[in-house]
Image (tube, rainbow, N blue to C red; front, side):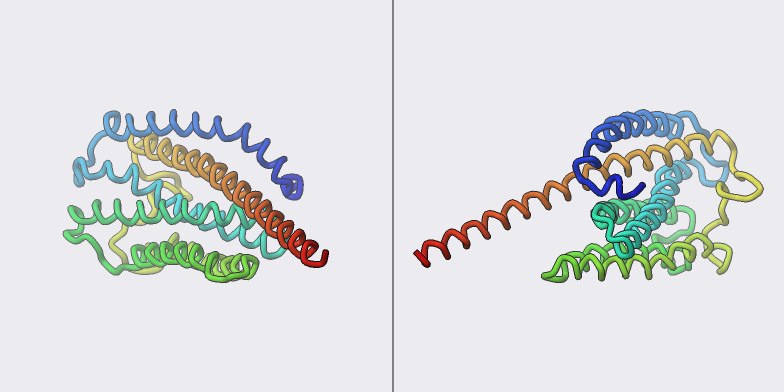
Length: 251
C-alpha cells in the first residue's frame, strides 16, 4: 500500500485532491473553535478568563506529541524500508512539530504566570516538553550536518527513533512524578472530566490544528519534491557540461 505512493507524481495527484479539503476544513474548524473558545464558552470559576489560553495551549501540546510520533514513524519507514517519500514526510513534519512545541511552551508560560506566580518551573512535564523542542531542532540540524544527504537522513532518523522515548515520558509525567500540572482531564478511561461547554471548543481547536498540519505537510512535501527535481536537473546540466568539455578537449 505504501509503495503505491512512492511515485512522486502519484503522490502529488493525491495531494492535489486532499489539500483544498484540508485547507477548507481547517478554516471552518478554526473559526468555529475560536468562536466557542472566546465567546461561547464560560470563564472558569478559579482561573477566570485566563482559562481561554487552554484552547491554544492544549491542542498545540497534543500536536507536538502527534507530530513527533509521525516523525518517528516516517523515520522508521525511511530507515527500514527505504520508502522514498517517508524521509520527505519526516523532513516536512519536523519544523511543523517544532512550531507546535514552541507554541505550547509559550502559551504554557503565559498561562502559568497568573496561576503559579512564575513564567517557568523545572518540573517533569515542562522539562520533558522542552527536551522535545530540542529534539526537533537537533533532527533538523542533523539533516543538513553532512555533505552526504543520505548520511544526514540516516543520522536524523536514528535520533528521531531514539528520541521517541520522550513521548510517553511527557504523557505520563503527571502520573509518575509530583508536578504542578493537573492530571489528564480529557483523555481518561472514565471519560472527560471537563464540562461540554469547554470540551467542544477544545476538540474543535484540536481538529483545526490537525487539519492545519495535514495542509502544511502536503505543501512542504510538494516543496521538497520540487527541490529534488531542481537538484537533479542541475546535476544533469553539470554532467552534460563536463561531458561536452571532455569531448571538446579530446577532439
